[in-house]
Length: 298
Ligand code: RET
Image 1: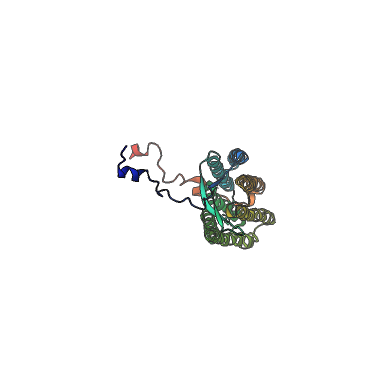
Image 2: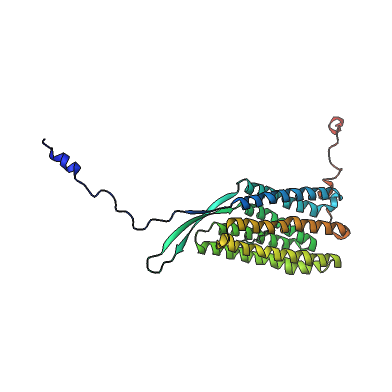
């Protein structure tokens, strides 16, 4: 049988297959919460929900002028309830991708890509609730408006730069943002520890002693947050379940426990606590408001 020369060319093996790469990239490892983490989130949803109800109940038991701390504290646990509900149902979670270098003795380094869950709903919660916690403490101490403003702005900067740090993909980014957050935190500490103490010095001895204890408790507790962050989102030493549990314990102490302590103590010394007057408790008053039937008389 005669074979056309073109057919011969078609049958000849060629080297059209690309050479196999010598280093196969490692598959991405996903670091995420397991059952323990998810259950912990639900436990906190319930605790924040119940304490919000309790705080609203406590608010109703005091006259409206004396509800300032009750209202602020109820808002704090309500926001935390919503944020934990988001995280427990899988909302408010994203991934941060980063690569770790694996060093070898004789062959070149290899690289392991990871994607780790970031519960960014926390940061939205903190951006709203930590200023409210600061307001609770500042009003207790009698801090000036200017100092409260500085504390609140520094606090919001701390949370937002912390959020950027969580999504850093190289260490200069992550730890750079972390450094700005720590500086902002020091401003908050300064306002509470120094200006707060100076302001409360003019108050009665009960308020002075109470401020010293609750502000001391707050500063110790708040200082543990950047440590947990450094071990979890920062250097990935602890896994996502451990991260969730650590933040859950801190959040329950910083919000419901702080809140019950503040409100029970406050109710016991209500005579010396700030009171809401004028518009904040009475509205615009009866003068000048329209009464039913006014239009008919005109
Ligand atoms: C971050 C990381 C960057 C460095 C610093 C942080 C501080 C966070 C704090 C959070 C407090 C949260 C509270 C929540 C209540 O439920 C953002 C973790 C300094 C102090 C009190």
